[in-house]
Length: 521
Image (cartoon, rainbow, N blue to C red; front, top):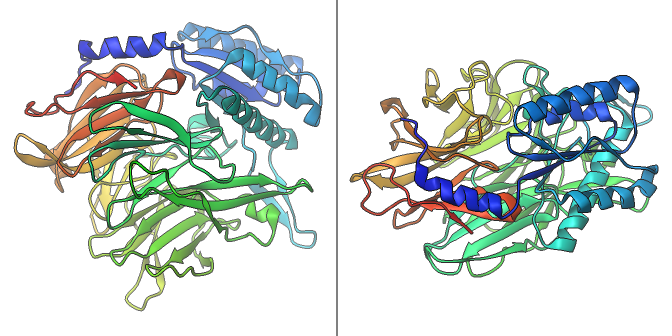
């Protein structure tokens, strides 16, 4: 069932009054902005900032893209804004442009592109994109970070890979993925929200269960990229993973996997701790490391996986007693950026990687001999940007590559099970243990292609029983997330313009998926 409840409109309008949803597209040349403009939702205020003036044909293509965005309902903040100056001299002018635009979100290019060839003798990779693209992306990240620290207002950043999947365009090519599960319920019932921003991961939390919110406050430590993974340990505590990107004095770039954890809602997370990377000995290789996936086994051992320079999977393990193994390369089939790790029903860990050279996935698991085995037979092909852990042990959520329909699969299944939703893009968030009408359910949350926030539900462990969906509110300014407390209280949230959150809670005693009107916090 799909409907748009009128009671949600007031909160959405309040979010809009708090500040229009403003987007800055920052690129090296005007033509680079064309695919990124196609991603902007109706109602967004959009400004294009280019570090160079570009050729006439590129400017013409951009003019057409701007007109198309305006026809879709975007509001254009003038024509392209060309920043004067080269290299470091361009940064002050770029920062001034962002100050004038005051964006909620910045779309830019990839600061650490993937190599297309590698010279073994010189140790130099070559890339299929101009060097100016990485420079523009790095400056956009730095300018957005500076703006956020000046104003205290969170700024989201999306860095887009080029040519990552020509079938799906720029929407499927994010260098640093948005988290599927960024809302968390502590042991005391208070909610915490972890949001990646230009100036790092920021946290907000409830002062009392169901009450007002504190924050945002930054997680201490290194400058991290605007992406995030949040996973639970066996005790149910949230652990955070991302990449730290450090520019050295000699111009080299170090990219490390970093980890933090929150042990009490009232206390800040631990500072970021570096786990290094599988190619850390050679910085040109190390900067290409894929975004981490992680999961705990039943014994409390933490496994962290990444896509390495050679496009296979590497992992590192922190044992339950605190020991840390070296990075180990698993080899085998080549994978794309996207990995997801899951804790299995039998207490182990599995990792899935979207295949780089074929439509499908590669599964890696520990065999009976204690060695990692490879399985190339899982019967599904996910859309880029859609892999996520399911709510039940061993389950993987994804969107079908061909149809876009949300699906779930478990190891050993003959085929994936559709979840009855072909609308929208990106990952689906899931939580289990929600009691509806006296029965335990798994609740799903997703953003629609037209910006709607929707939730669905199916009996725990029975997605084959069917999923019913309903809209919560008409505008979602980022990936929705859901959390359930140990007392079974359910909440759903999305980011809102101005750095706030829209939060709705399941009404006690309400039949089915009955929610309170969303609050802007």
